Image (cartoon, rainbow, N blue to C red; front, side, top):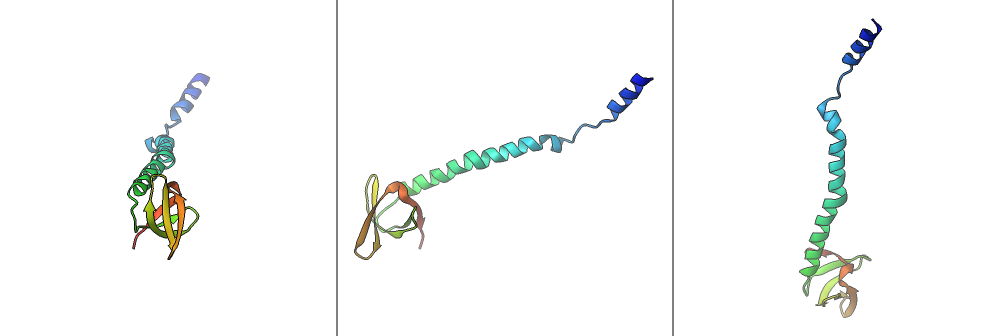
Length: 100
């Protein structure tokens, strides 16, 4: 009799739903996307922007300085931050190209 009572209790236990059991996997996939894939895509776009820099582009540096590109070298870019004021920056210091 006692063994039947345990069997009934075990049979009454339900399995979690498919959505609930797959929730950790969905969370891990989302985490993988935001931690690995998305930053790679953004860095790829930034590297493309740096490769396409040309004289006359308005850009902003990591320090927040803005200016027009007056000279583009292999590693360095010269920005004119004010009329007649050229400043040389490393190419990697350019964060964004300002449109307009």
